[in-house]
Length: 237
Image (cartoon, rainbow, N blue to C red; front, side, top):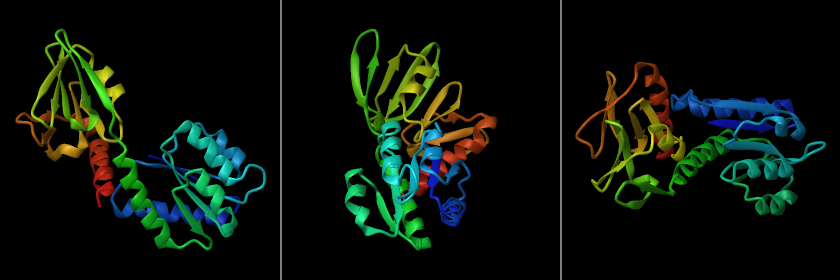
């Protein structure tokens, strides 16, 4: 997850960064990056896919509202916090679908509560329809109904919450590219798991709700997988 902070006052950038890091630390999450900038121009030079942005409205040059507008063109689901001491910008902020309007001086708990809500929203958006094409039929399902995709004997088997299993000739990498990475994780070369349905994991094995067989978890992916699960759990608090 990428967090962008942009304010022409370095003290505010440091303060917001401190509170954001505290939020993740309290939830034992390390799988995130914070990008900090002091001008809108520099912020827009960063090509990273930004999930959450904290933007000061009043900056010389490109202001926070305009920065947010450009960032939303890159990620329509970005969550934007506007930071300012001038309520006159409220209408402009609402026009740009700003998530939260935080007044200066910044309150720690406003940031912490905002981050909690932002995480919940991030993980509530992950549903879209996907088509499964087989030799006999074309089936359209919701992404959220997939609990696991298993690669076996040159076929992919898509397990769903309804208990149905669909077969597909598409590659495992094809399916991974179709799915939202925030909730789906390729645990090894043969499994893609929806973290929402993980019941437990240890010693290279994952127990998944609704599946008799366990999914395999590569040793080199265990740390990253744990972070993915923790991130999801935070969104449910």
